[in-house]
Image (cartoon, rainbow, N blue to C red):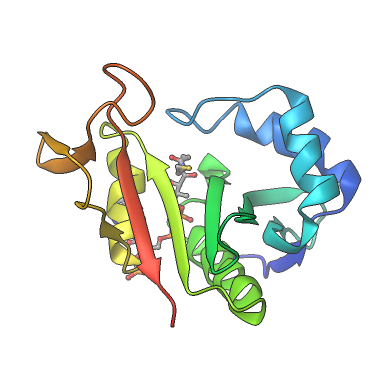
Length: 163
Ligand SMILES: CC(C)(COP(=O)(O)OP(=O)(O)OC[C@H]1O[C@@H](n2cnc3c(N)ncnc32)[C@H](O)[C@@H]1OP(=O)(O)O)[C@@H](O)C(=O)NCCC(=O)NCCS
């Protein structure tokens, strides 16, 4: 595989991120303005995997909580379907962990849909645990927090302690 450079986003990356996000089903696509907010205002916790030939092979967009600065949140992670299974996702998450550890975070959280088996297997492999502190509902063997995103929208809430 071409060697990748994991780097913080540049503001203009949002255009390519938006294009790549179209291929990241079942992750939902956002309005371009959301990608732009991350690449402009959350550069420290938003990263891309840059290919030597140019172009982006994956991205992770996250932030550190203002309410609890010891907690970071991964909003979106996507690897180009052609690049999957080559540890691009792992490298993005590991670099994200490095970035937020430097900023003294102790915990990372994220949510995913109970039907997103790729994502669930991936995060479990990376040591993330299902949050069962809230009322959960078992969907196809995974514990989703009931009505997390509104009535009937149960979501798997993952966390990882990084202390
Ligand atoms: C989930 C996703 C980011 C994984 O990226 P990836 O680059 O293919 O994953 P990696 O190659 O880094 O895999 C890391 C580890 O997870 C495991 N893994 C990844 N996908 C897996 C799957 N579908 N089933 C089982 N294990 C899986 C790998 O085997 C690997 O294990 P190892 O490090 O012990 O060898 C990618 O499939 C994707 O972009 N999906 C669509 C978007 C999405 O759902 N994003 C997450 C929700 S925000």
